[in-house]
Amino acid sequence: MFIVLALILGINRLTTLSLSNTRDEMRLIKSQYAAQNGARWFNTYCESNNKWDYRENLDIGVYDDNHIYIKSDPRATEPKHVMSYAISKGVTSRVHIYVRETENHSLEIVSIKPY
Image (spheres, rainbow, N blue to C red):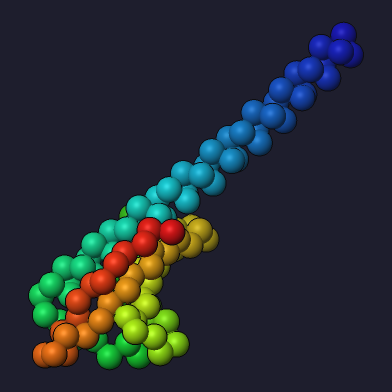
């Protein structure tokens, strides 16, 4: 009887850990998807010949419990490194974006790296 009880408790513990890991993974996937949506939004922002001074964050908004914003790297590099951040219930994901300014001071995306 003791062996059966130990087996039940062990299986219960494994099931609880598996459920917790699955929930964490789902939050991470949701956050990464939101960061990619932020990168798509920034791509459209750049294609519309918008300008940005890199000092303030571009706050995209809160969608489905995800706070999405674009933040510039403070280092001076060419092309400029910016990141799309998404925060979902304590889980942060980001997408790296490299941009450069054109002659008319609008932004042009060089590359997007989703990791």
